[in-house]
Length: 204
Ligand SMILES: [Zn+2]
Image 1 (cartoon, helix red, strand yellow):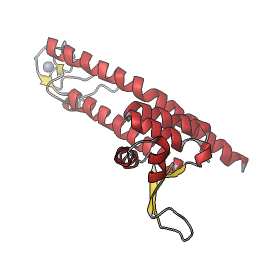
Image 2 (cartoon, helix red, strand yellow):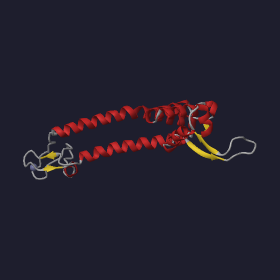
Image 3 (cartoon, rainbow, N blue to C red):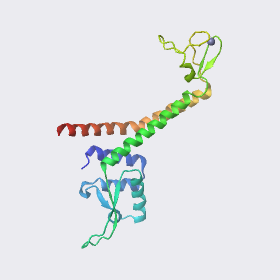
Image 4 (tube, rainbow, N blue to C red):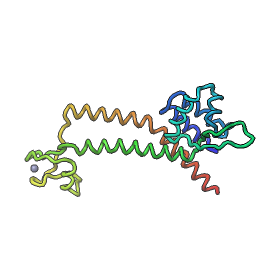
């Protein structure tokens, strides 16, 4: 059975990235009386929603690994026919969130990398020779960790950013702030859950 914190994380993720129908459905799955398992057709009846609406939301939740599913065969003596049963597989969910978070972080970092290796960044104040960060690293003063002009043997200067670059940099900082405002609470919850997992392991 998933811990309360795992359920809180699931609610947060669905609230942030999914629509209202998905949120209503997720609440049903996270209700312990349903045992985190429910059939699509039963769910539609219970919520008084069309099966089309419910299936659309379930597909979305499954695609993003918030929910897992299996095809249930008709059992003798049961009124219910064959149908798809969905369940909140909390281990799969946590792994999926971790993976997605890593992907987002990588994407953000790769954008930073492209920017800093793009064009000339360093200039020699004497001979005006310019080098990009990749080139400049080849001539580094190991005592001061400054980039050195190979011709004049003096430290290179970082050129003042142009107005456009400053705008882009501000825009990037804003993006980064938005990203962290969104992601940090999720990272914190994942960390708490990981620590819970370790505490359980230590008890055993
Ligand atoms: Zn020089």
